[in-house]
Length: 141
Image (cartoon, rainbow, N blue to C red; front, side, top):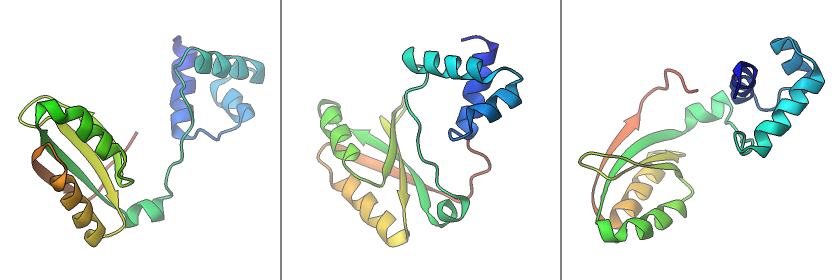
């Protein structure tokens, strides 16, 4: 990726729906150049797809928690598949240290968050969890 590609990816991460005309204006290149660079970035796998972002008001009403999870090693794949089936589990990361995974949970209220945490704790292979509720997002890139 060259410098233009990096700037283009950054702009698309900010707003994936921005028009090619606007991108061209922001990056001081032609629309044709932008269209070609986006196509190449998609073909080479740098850009995998485009996703939805919550509006600020809706996101502010959601409760987000990070859940550290200790898993029985032989059941890691089974546990991962079970967590992937839970709608409230937005992402799952393998980590080093005392825990094996960190799940990012988004729930509509404390009751639902508690239910999801209970469901996670009840999964076969889960040895223990440690949860932290996010109080405020300072920034998110």
